[in-house]
Amino acid sequence: MTITRREIIKTGLAAGTALSMPTILRAQTSPDDARTVRWVTDGELVVFDPIVSLTLAQNHALAIYDTLFESDSKGIPQPQMVGKWGVSEDKKTYTFQLRDGLTFHDGSPVAAADCVASIRRWGQVDVGGKLIMAKVKDISKQDEKTFTITLNEPMPLLIPLLASSYVGYYLAIMREKDAKLPPTEQVTANIGSGPFKFNQALAKPGVSFTYDRNEQYIPRQEPADAFAGGKFVKVDRVVTQYISDQQTAFAALQAGEVDLVQVPSQVLYPVIKSDFNLELEIINTSGQDMFLRMNCLQKPFNNVKARQAMLHLIDQEAIMLAAGFDPNYIHPVTSIFGNSTPYSNDENTGWYKKGGDPERAKHLLQEAGYAGETVVILQATDWPPASNAAQYLANTLRKIGVSAELAPSDWAGVEERRAKKEPIEDGGWSVFISDFTNSKFGNPISLPLLAANGVDYYGWPKNDEYEALRAKWVEVETLEERQALARAMQRLAWDFVGTVMLGQHIEPIARRKSLIGLVHVPSAVYPMWNMQKAST
Image (tube, rainbow, N blue to C red; front, side):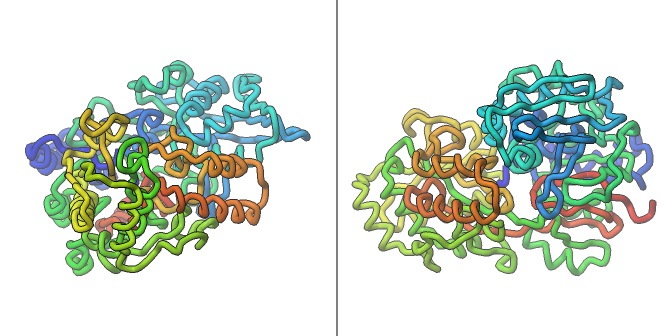
C-alpha cells in the first residue's frame, strides 16, 4: 500500500480515547455537528510533510496544500493553481501564471517564488520530479505571479508529470521559506493554500486531527472531477480519527459517532449492507495491487533464480484469500503495469499459473544454489491483510524447504527496517509486503516501484537494459509508442523479477447515508472537498 501506510496505535488506550472523544469534541469545539464530518482513517498520521512521506501525509497534504496541475477522471492533466500556461516554439520553455486570489493560510499571497522553491524540493525526491530536474536548465521567477521552467531539450511528459502527484510524492506548493528546507527535514508549519486549514490547537496525536474550511480559498469553477476541477468545501470541519479496532470503528459508525470508515473490515460487509443507515461505496475506482518486494542485495534474493522462484511460487488467489479479502473483490495481476491501465499487457506472463507452481519454484531455488539461508519476512501486525499474507507466505516457503522467519512489528517498524541494506544478522530483511493503487502502475516514471536503477525503491533491483527503456518513456509522444515500450519493459521485468504481484483488491469505504458527494478518484488518497451532510 498503498502506503506509511497503516501506522499504529500505540496502546489500546488510544482506541478507547478515540471512542470517547467525539462527544467531548462536539461539546467543546465543534462549530456545528451537522457541518462536521468525522472520518476514520486507515492509519495514524505521524509524518505531516508530503515530501518526507509517501502515504498518509498525502491525505493531510491534499487537504491543506494546493498544487499546480491535477489529473481528471480520464487521467488528463488540468490546471489547478495555474491560471494560464504556454510553451515556446522550440518546446523547451514553459511559462506558468498563477490564477488570481491564491493566498496561504497565514494571509500571505502565493507567489511565483513559492512555486519555484516547491518544485525544486519535490524534484529531489519524486521519481518524475527527478527526471524533470535532470532536464532542467533553469526554473525561475519572472514576476510575482509568473515563473518559467526551461529545459535543455523538449520533454512531452512535463505537464503530465507535474499533474501526477497522486502517483508519487505530492507536489505541495509551500511557502518559499518552508520549501527551502532540505527534503529530509520535515516542514512543521502546516501552512498551505489549500481548501482546508490544519487546526493545530485541536491536534491530538494518536487520536484525531482537525481540518477547518479555509474561508479564503477560491476554488476553480469547474465541477470536481477526480483530483481536478473545483475544490468546493461544503462542510465547516473534518475530523480524522484513528481507531485501530475495526469492530470499534464500525460500532461508532452505526451509532452515528463517525460518518465514514475508510477501510471497514470485509467480514462486516454483509452487516453494513443490511443496515438502512449505512452504505458501502467504492471511492478508489482503481483498487489496490498488493505485491511483495525482495532484498536484491542479500542472499538468497541477490540471485535472480531465487527471485524467479518466488514468481512461480505465488498462488495469487490463495494469498489474497488468506489476507482476508472478500473473494468478490479480488483479481489476479499479471502485468507490471497493473490491471486496466493503458499499458497493461500480457508480455512474458507464461509464469502465471492458477495455484502457483511449487515444484518449479523448488527447482529454481536449487539452481540458485539456495543453501538454507534464513528468509526474514517483515510482518506489519497493524495491517491485518498484510500480516495474514506474510504468515501465509512464510508457511508456503517452508513447504518447499525455505527457512522462513517472520519479523513482526507495526507498519512504522516495517518502514524503518526495510530501509536497511545490511544482511539480516545486522538488522536487515529479505521480503516485505505492501500495495499501491492500481492506477499508479500506469506511470513507470513517477512510481518508484517500477524503477530498476538500484536506488529508488526498497529491494533495489538493478537492470540497465530495463532502465534504458524506461528513460525513453519521457521521450516518446504517442500512446501507441508507450504501449510498445511497456511490452518491452515487461518482457525484461518478469525475467529479473524486482517485484512479485500478489493480486488486486477493491476496498469500498463504509459511510452513513447522510454523508454524500464523495469524490471518486483512482487512488487511496481521498479528497475532503465536495462532500456534505444530507441535512445541510
